Image (cartoon, rainbow, N blue to C red; front, side, top):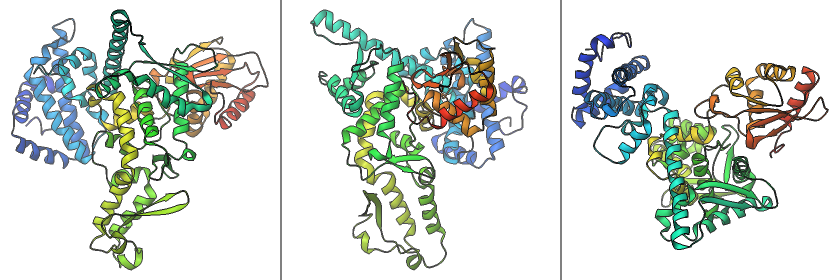
Length: 539
């Protein structure tokens, strides 16, 4: 059986594709009950064999697409009616379902990079029209992050253009003033208040609030800081994002709690802030996605899973509250007298301004001790308390804001892990040569001494210092989800040798250097700027 056998991929595929297509056809048309058994069987495969199954299916799909391309100047929509491709995609869906249960491989293992060469925008439109034809958007795990970002950018631009046309139509036919862009005028000293008020004001004229609010927020965003000159060509918008996120997620502001072990934050159950401000956070994260801006937001994957309505439990809690989760696990596995050792009752706890708040997890929970026999129920209820019940109002407001911007078909193509990548960027190791290859220089030449010294120093830094340099220049220590090739990195000369320090314009991913006379001087000035850069040089 070619599906179960060992193959040299993709060489033997060319000889056995006739057999493989029949196997895929049979497997894809099994009953739902048999599909369920097949998924369970896949979960028991070793990681190596499981990955080979994925490679087999992807190689087969690539083989068919390449075959179509060789008979046509472009990959045509012939695949829309090709039963062999749709059968292979359905088999891959079974493997994907198994992976969701067992987490054997990463999402990227399912990506078929050849799919990026088809007309994904036409494919997306076909899928949206529900025409009954096959579309790769039905099986989005096959589409790479780059392909999905292309679709969501297209969807955002399409909706922005639609709102711009509607604005012109309204002005011309109804003589009613409206703008094709979402314009926010912000006073720096009242950043949060003005942002919330401006967004609310921009939505007041909407008659059908629920259906049109998202469209209004998807207009092209333009930021103006009151009393300052400058036209927003993208830099002011990024600065607004950076400053707003820095304020909203500051633990001192009280909306989010911070875990020192994981360096991640979570919704504060004791927050005194209004639901409107959590709504604003949701809008900001949604706007960042639709404006291709990476945010320094340290929310865990559990947040994005909740946005998609996916169950979150103890494994998710481990990620952002590892010490607390470890304590719960110890409670579950303890072999002694649980009641007298742990002295716990069915009560959830959280700190509120120095005072410990206790909330019963069940009726009369404060009088029910945790024992060996009910500890599983206790842990399950406590985890649910932390992840859901204690933050219901905060999270629902956040979710409402997020979906008012991001609600739509394009978002459904993504997995929670991919949304996290869109928002935060990737934590993959920095490839300095790759970053150097895409860097643009202003009043510097690539081969002059200062630039050579800079790249030499960058390479010699330890990974932590490299991340700090990236944060200094871009406002985040992460790279775009699609890699450094999509990071607009710029190095500018601001003068000859000087005792002054380098400057970073995070809004433009721009590092400004003097022509320091020596490598040692550049190193001293640059490292000191990085280490003292908390809130420094943001322009």
